[in-house]
Length: 257
Image (cartoon, rainbow, N blue to C red; front, side, top):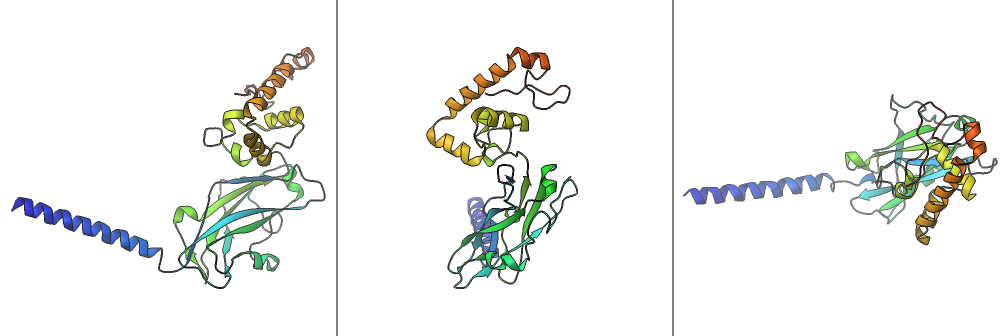
């Protein structure tokens, strides 16, 4: 009798779990929904662009949940603010407003497709020369779409007219592949690399280096150039050597792995 009781209990638990799973699934298949493909913070800079370039476009991939439609469907973004942000982006000054009529036709999931890259247009305001601004954006429900998973609804764009981290060097740990070749990021290290290599050091440069299998070559080149700089008597006498991350007292010397 005990064995039968335990068996029935196990069956009931299993059925309940399956039922809950199906119910959870139905929550995201009852209507069309949208969510972001990637919520990682994106960095961008105008620093490499000619002065005549006043706009840059960042594409945010949006995925749909549910069936396709045979008509274009509008996607809605809104800006969200966080009190911790020192320099929040200002609509109309730092980016084209999401409800601007000029981009209305671009903010869509095209007919018979399940995803799209939605453009976010950044503006090259003079304030970007002195500060890095953050645009926090979030999907919002509209008459076309409800929202998908909570953790897949928002992202941020950090941008300026100064040197910025690129995606593969976005953090100082193994989550960013460039960290293994370049080490800890600093703006001064970034500028040193540009001065040594005479190249635009950005995501495209990094991907080209990886595709060529040239990580060790570039790593050795940069280490050699840094050692030469730090051992130069003129640099030592002037206090420029060893090259440090900043001019602040106690700032760590720049190194390459």
